[in-house]
Image (cartoon, rainbow, N blue to C red):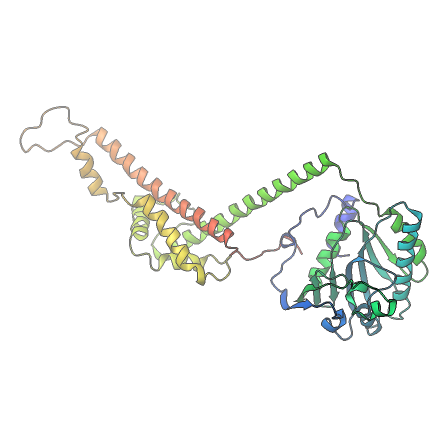
Length: 411
């Protein structure tokens, strides 16, 4: 168990309150994990034909049901392991309060784990039993295999069925991802299951197998399905999803806005350090001229300054079109030059309540000054609104097309 999980478990004293999130990207940085291969297992292929590795020092197995033995692939790993092997096993287990069925399952567990503890490399085994788990995972040092295949007798070839004279082939087509740099990810998944609802944990050694497994087995009981409780949990989860999406939008929009401001700083002789607070009307007009003028450099530079993005080369054309569309919609018919605004308002004769003599200049008084100031303020607001609309539109595109890099909240 990792230090993070152990701290959470000790602090809350429960396996049902901590680590409630279901997106591992909130807790783990995936940037170093690589896909080494995608494995398609046919019905007559043994797991050990697909999964090969020499000596291992850390082995984690998560499977659905443990029968009366582990598959050959697990035994071969353990038999050839380094001294001081760290071994973790998680599995589904359910006490059903039926003497015959419960005895059969418990006897199988005891036999399987006694078989593992017989190896000299194995001093102890950390286990998680949970009646609700369906995870299939095998971690061998930094190699990680996850997919549909159980690491049980059905992961063997058909020889086991031949020897037992089964009439039915229980081996299925399976799909697995082979991941590299997967040790820490496997630890993260182990911690999630360790703290999950229904998990019962323990440490096995050659002296306590029967006692510990008997105790754990009896605690593994499925929680009855309660409609009201399930509905409440579902609604809580949906709310958390909505909240997460909204939180991400706010963070990404903030970063996008900073990228736009940084680009304006670089291209114009203005300071956007405090946003729009320190700008005067001439600064707004420079921004306006840049947005409605030649933007061939501006938008690519904005995207380059969005350093939280993955590669955007294939999306650059769409992103620039989206940004420019917002500019056209907001700033298209604005008149920004102060002199032209002045003359247009003068023509409205807001301060003229008399008939002018021929050649007499139209007065430009208090009403006209107020109208001019109002027009200039509206222009500034339009520029701010335009950049805000652009940030919203780019943020939406970034999220919908999964362009943002994954950042871990904790490790």
